[in-house]
Image 1 (cartoon, protein in one colour):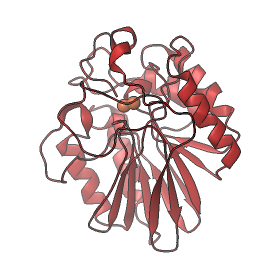
Image 2: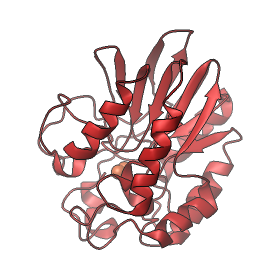
Image 3: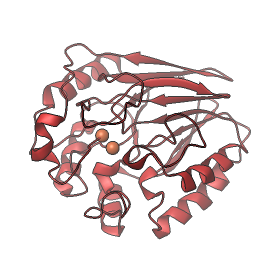
Image 4: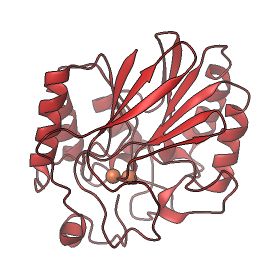
Length: 274
Ligand SMILES: [Fe+2]
Ligand SMILES: [Fe+2]
């Protein structure tokens, strides 16, 4: 089984400065026809602020001609009160996502593997759906099959016990809750987006892949240096019976634009943006 991880397309009908990149990505996807595309969030530029961006994202992704599974990012459904007080995850934002793009957390058995999509944006919100997702995860993780997990934010940057990394990762409390559940199962891949950085690192038996963005990279506003490669592209994951390998793919005609020249137009209240 082979699938393509697409991330951080930031589609918008109103703001189209990165359109050449996502169109070059769409061309590659149509030509290579993966059996499944998994999108690790920020499908829309500002779906949390204007649902018409979710409409644009749904329409853009429908044109790829492939089966798509997606989990939401902060720009799709918002974030926690501490990180994004003006766009907190709430019922209306979750419903706006679900009605256009399907479930925000899901499980699919394919090729002898269990694929699990998580809504990372619920973590740390205290929203009722956060507890419901954890209870659901405790059930679906109970399988002898190898597991691949997909979510928007990475669990950590350098190591599982590190302190809070602010905007960039899942916070330590929910991170520990997730890792405790994962430790009861055979989680061999954790694939995330959000950082607009590509990285592929093993921690124990688990491959942690940061899927690259398809729209823009972050420049000087992304501090401190997080490692990995700030380059646009896709990630391919190839699954065998007991292992998974990953590969960075660079579609033709991408340009590694940075967000900073557009930051005040797109995200005027944000200090950092990914
Ligand atoms: Fe993000
Ligand atoms: Fe993003």
